[in-house]
Length: 85
Image (tube, rainbow, N blue to C red; front, side, top):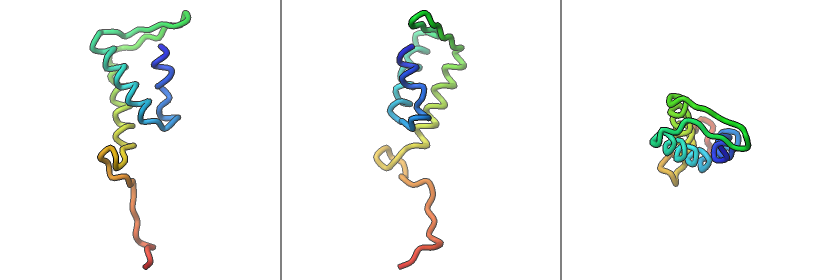
C-alpha cells in the first residue's frame, strides 16, 4: 500500500516520475492478479477495471506533460500575434 500512497498524488505534485512509478506497479499488480493490499490494518481493494483506469489516467498525465527531452513539443500553445522585432 505504501507504493500507492507514495505515488497516487502525482497530479497534485505535478510529477511525471510518480505517475510512471504508479503505472509500473499497477501493471505488475494486474499481471499477477493482485487487486488488494493492506498495511497497518488498512485494506484497499480494486477491481481490475479500476486498476486499468489508474494506468490509463497516469498515461494520459505523462503524455500531456511530455517535454522535448521526452519527445514532446515542449510547448502547449504558441501565439505570435503580438510578436515584435
